[in-house]
Image 1 (cartoon, rainbow, N blue to C red):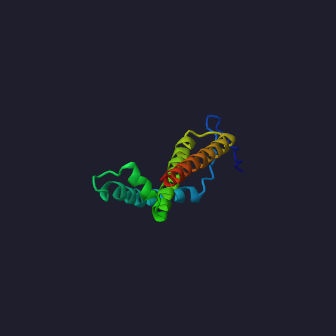
Image 2: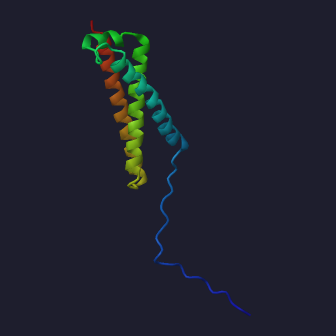
Image 3: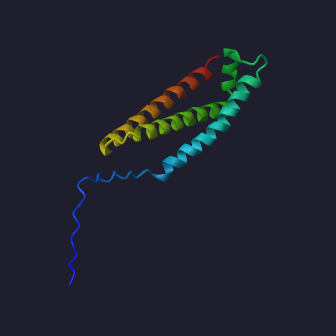
Length: 133
């Protein structure tokens, strides 16, 4: 009768890498904001550089332009979208270094705080500029 030999564990084998639970919404958000950026950047460039008489608007023209509620919302959406897209991209790059789970959580929270601060400051600037006159 043949006896089965127990296989010895391979001590040279490296432990399996920790599986990250990268949610699908992060990838979808990155792709979605990228697509939206193409649209918003195109609108921004056309409005700021091709519609203006001399190719560039003066500061007074920008102030008048931002007073239009539709333009204000588009510029605010542009700010939010570019911030979100950039910070998701930065998060992805930093996670490629393989930080520990706790570091990953802190990194994500820190980038969220940075994003909120950036959008808040940018929105304040838009409101301030649109309110001048």
